[in-house]
Image (cartoon, rainbow over the protein chains, first blue to last red):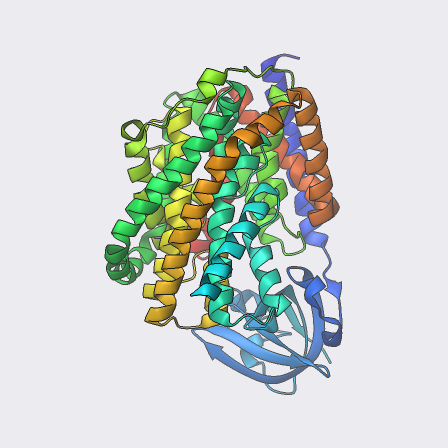
Length: 125
Length: 397
């Protein structure tokens, strides 16, 4: 195979790979868990949980909430994501205690407590 | 004092093992140690984590140079490191990386008081300009190809790798995307293009002495660039910074290896300074320390800086002692067999850590990574993987 043919082949395969990745990213589903099931094995993973808002506050424009369903977990919504996560149906700017929310994001640990950095959130019920 | 020394020694030993084992990330180890609840008081655990990070950084050049398996700090050392290893200068490459780290550490220590004073005001001053600076530096790097056709190909490679970065690094459902990304962009093409090559065995070349005057410009530049890396939020690894170093320092393989290891050392050292003076955790180890200790006292600061200096020094000495044995061990395996074993290992570790999406990322990254060497442009343009998402993030996208 000539060098320019190899380059073209690599380029076309790159495009194909990127297209497949874009497709996977679009339809990648988070692992659904109960808050009580959250463990160290889920750290760094993309998961979703549902619970009732026990408290909320904002700091530096970022939204923090405590979500409970028996045990509780802290949720963080960074200010850069707040506008796109706040739709007509689920306006996170109006999130308050007692709201039932399903949140999808990456599980991490901060000061010994589990925390989910939200990528999507929707009010349920 | 005894407990502190024990923490440092434990960190050095754990870090050296972690550095030799490819794919084991600092953040993974730090999180694991914190979650273990070892019973260690926070200051000793912080000291262990910092010592581990320092030691790991020194030893991670071994898999990068000889096994082509990189960390985000050592990824660019694959290119000059492999070149030197194929010329029978693998031992010299390790010695060069170790000695450059040592002198960078010394210069960083001398600059520490200045860094502690300057960091907070400089951080506030440069933060608004991060995105334009990253964008301008990226464009200048593309233009160093000089001719229109290479610039066009380099731009294509930069954009393709940037697109890969946006998809792989910003999609939460892809776990651990950095390993398949970097390995695909750098290691797989390097292995495939060299699999039939026969490395030279030249004992005299391997035992060449490290010459400080020859590498001093790269070490000084690396020390300064490592400091600057902690100022710019968009720059998180030595390799990103080393790419921009190319704008100012035309480097040979040896020079570039010296630059990368100097940047990596000073970047980690000054990240401790950033934590102390501005409360900014710029790398995983300092983020873990911030989580454990919160706001640092003067005593904590002295402990961590002292621990970093001791662990860097011990690790460098250990690597220099072990280097001949490591090189001898690796030279007993034929190059082709080693390449095939590494390929198999990469596939297994990517599948284990990142699953089938990781294999897809690896495949895509390998195709993108192959374009640059085939077309004769610099491979460093694939750092678009990190730079484009960083630029977009700084612009609020």
